[in-house]
Length: 395
Image (tube, rainbow, N blue to C red; front, side, top):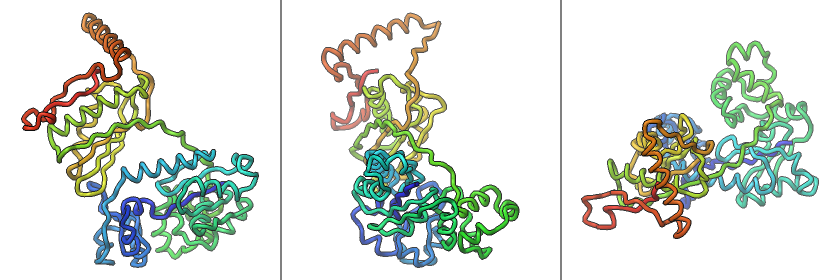
């Protein structure tokens, strides 16, 4: 059995924060700067006007002129979602997150850990989350999602049986449930225009007709409506390493590059890195005007060279939509340990650097991690002495 945990409007709830009154009025997530102008998660009051995630911004405002647009908070969503996944993994669940607010895991391996019944496994997951959530269980991932969407906050819904029972359960449900899967989200409106309103009607269509009209996504949607789905692919729990820097004022240009320089040096100097290279990092910022900005930066090859990392991150930092009050750099995925690649023409320089590296390690071993620091110029012309230079780890 597959258990699905659904937190409706998770991104909107995190972005709203303490402003819970926004969720009682027509509200939706504003489009992220530089992205397509479509609204994100919507409140129930906004959905009453026919506004759904992905609706064009102009159409949403035309349907509801009083619609409140909430600045997105992608960094806050990622951090809070990671904490919830860790809580589920603490009860032994091997989770597969579909998107923020939707995660599935296989319950078969947890039965003996939690009393031998599915109900106790679901209750253990509810206690681990420590917040209201809808939980459902079924023989397939999509069936569990459908059960979770119909469940109440304190009463989970369980669909027992196999593919036949799952197909019978899904038959009367609306095709709008296909929005819960990334592969079939765009099929909901075309199916509605063709008069296909339920999953049972979709499952009854001939395979060749579905393939001719919708291609591979249509065939996959038909498989889901028939109660069949693929196996779960649990994630590997990540090892996170992050550095954060508070910006005293709205920095830009060279000063922002110096802040990035300092973050990269601090991240590479962390002991937890254990000499490994970085395959993927996350560059995030908290904006002065409200909301956050977050961008995933994969490198072409695993890096541990600060110069090459800054060259790759500087263009991304230029995409900041507004001045930032806090800058953060986190390691998302690690690579193999860094190798010492020396040039054949610079043997003397390589030997000198090796001796200097050994001296720095000996000094740190004797006097602590702050024994060898480097002076980095930040605001040379500032009247405040503390802002002119900062100390950064020597590498």
